[in-house]
Amino acid sequence: MNTQEPGPNKLFALGQRPTTSLLHVLIALKIILLFVLAWNIRFVMDEFVQLGWAKYFSNGLFDTIWHPKAVGYAVFYEIAHLIGWNATSILLAGRMQSALLACGTIALIYACARALGEDRVRSLTIVLILLCFSNFMERIFRTIAEPPAVFFAVAALLVILRAPALSARQLLAAGMLSGLAFLTTQKSVYFNVALGVSLVADAALMRRYATGAVRGGWLVLGWAVPVIVYCFIFGGGAPVLAAKNLILGPVEIATRGGGDYGGLRQFVVQTLARNAILYGICFSGMALSLMRIMKLDERRRIALIFSLIVTALVFAHDQPWPYVFIMALPFIALWSLELLDVTAAYARYRVVVLTVLITAMAMSYASDVVYLRLNNQTQLELVARAETLLAPGEKYFDGIGMLPNRQEPSTLWLDQHHVLKTLQEGRESEAYKILSDSPPKVVLWSYRMDMIDPVIAPLIRDSYVQIAPNIRMAGRRLRSGRLDVFKVPVPGRYNLYTTNGQPADGKVEINGTPRSLPLSLEAGVSDVVLRSGPAEALLLPEGDYENLIVAGEDNAELFRGIYN
Image (cartoon, rainbow, N blue to C red; front, side, top):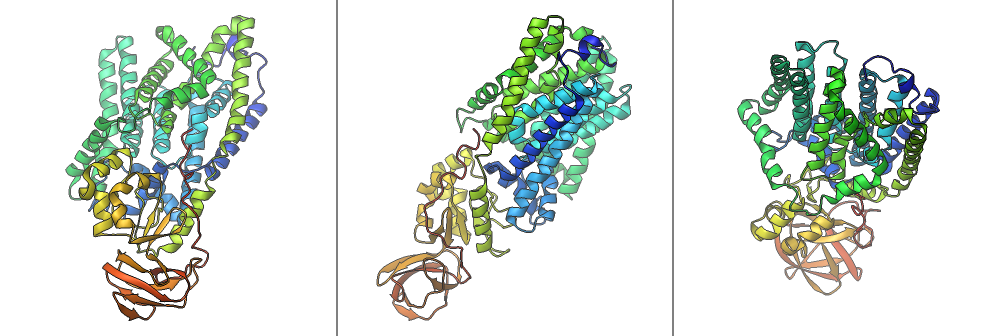
């Protein structure tokens, strides 16, 4: 296919061509659904911690905290911190940010299609097909590093495709955008490698080896510019250390791989099964284009090689969580109409392919609506309740960073690797040391905390009391006349409250000595007896707990089924 407007066969390759207006309506409906999903869908654990990393910019990042990953994504999500006024609003603002960025990525893919010679109708159709992939619709709005990285990667490819001639200026610009993608997440090395190889390979196929070397040089130079700036901005007086951390930091994570989790390849099967028709059509288009690669014009050849490499690397990734596939889907979708073009001369086959494609697209709308069942109401209620229990300077711990605007004793991330490491190290583990050396006021509970409970139970059992589902607070549940051991984790003023959070009249005895309420307690072990007052009461840090204490078991559904 050349870069001119499609001829008759191409123009009518879709059979009875949908009108531009209809495509606009269908795409608009998808985008509306995208924002509805972004607002309502349950958060995955990675979203909390990656959105929350922005809080460390003024609190030790690249000073006392050297994150092993690039933090470009945190710069992006700092906007949500500036817009939001509490934890819940920050989380939802981050989601809206990502959804808006997704619209930008969609627009760039449309522009890429146009740069490859597609007309408006076909370019809009490519965009619609992209929006019909379940992984794209369900993951592109996540507050993680991949969405902004994809945006920069698509922008880099677009610069190359729209260049009248690949001069140094265009190659530098594409390299800089590739560098920004890398600074968002080092997984963007997939994009970087794919772009470099596609530019060099295209020149090599045309036997222009010197041109390929020059292209690679300018691209690497452009890539290096934002990386060097990053190292000086965040490294301060130690840019070399920042560079070392940036390049070598992810190596340990990459070499560790997904072995700790086991069974992650199931997500490859999942995405292929849920989008079998769309993948079949797109992969067929890529294969058909590859078979005639020498007949393609330069732009399509570069785009094809880029798409093939990115797709191969993403699907071979050792930790193929569902959101990883959004790194490949925009580029896969670019080839979605090739199979229809090939069958254009065979009416019977063209009708079959078109019917199957339209059916898959229609089913995707139903799939989007069904996905809404995974609503985030319980998660946001937990976040709001926990935030209210903590003053801005007070600390909490959960190992997954659910509160983007509250401090934690450590940046420990309780992924499966660190869960297993905690169980192996026991009292020498970081989790144990956090709760013993710098205990937080509040502990948020999830299945990750359940997994390390054998290690931390001695530090939780007599020091924290459950006051709501998934929330433990420094304190002790007391029953009239019974001696209870209270291992005070956080020193301060404590008072007596009823089990529904109202201040309680009563008297307590601490280590055999009657004490008036409220009372000051030092960290350490105390014997506490409730001598008068309600039959059951809570000894908690002094505060207002109206409507904050709720009876009930932990909600096991907080993160269940979020990758389905």
